[in-house]
Length: 163
Image 1 (cartoon, rainbow, N blue to C red):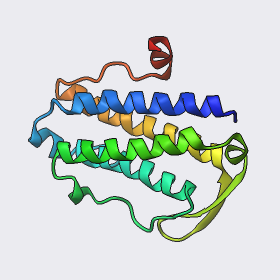
Image 2 (tube, rainbow, N blue to C red):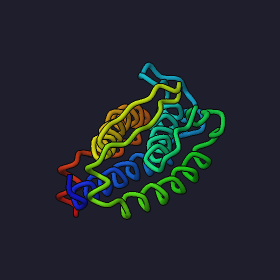
Image 3 (cartoon, rainbow, N blue to C red):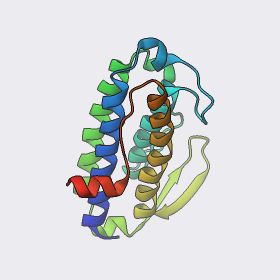
Image 4 (cartoon, helix red, strand yellow):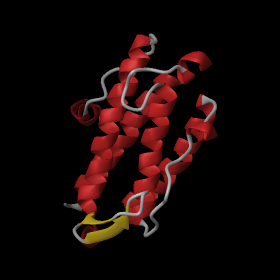
């Protein structure tokens, strides 16, 4: 994978996350905390899961394999979640901005949170993170739409057209 291609995917990821977070800023505290029948539950738990995945994967790429995800309880409010997400996005984008093409196309050894070892090409893992986020942003978008706070279209092609 070429550096400019991964940069495009990560700029899209940040754009799509921002659309979801901007819409989520309009929900009530009750809506933010409400359960829902999605793979990771309601809006808070879905968003924390998505943020946690970004944090875990970035740490793995930097040579550290976290042994647990971020805790839902650490984000009792949307404001707490958004603040932490903005901090993580800066660190993540610094990594993406500085990753070399050679590193993108090399193997990375890491451990899952349960300690199982794996090895994959770095660019595969980085593409996975964006794809993973797409699934959970879609779930969050459905919840937000039900709450009357649709984030609008979050498709990659829309991002490209808006650029």
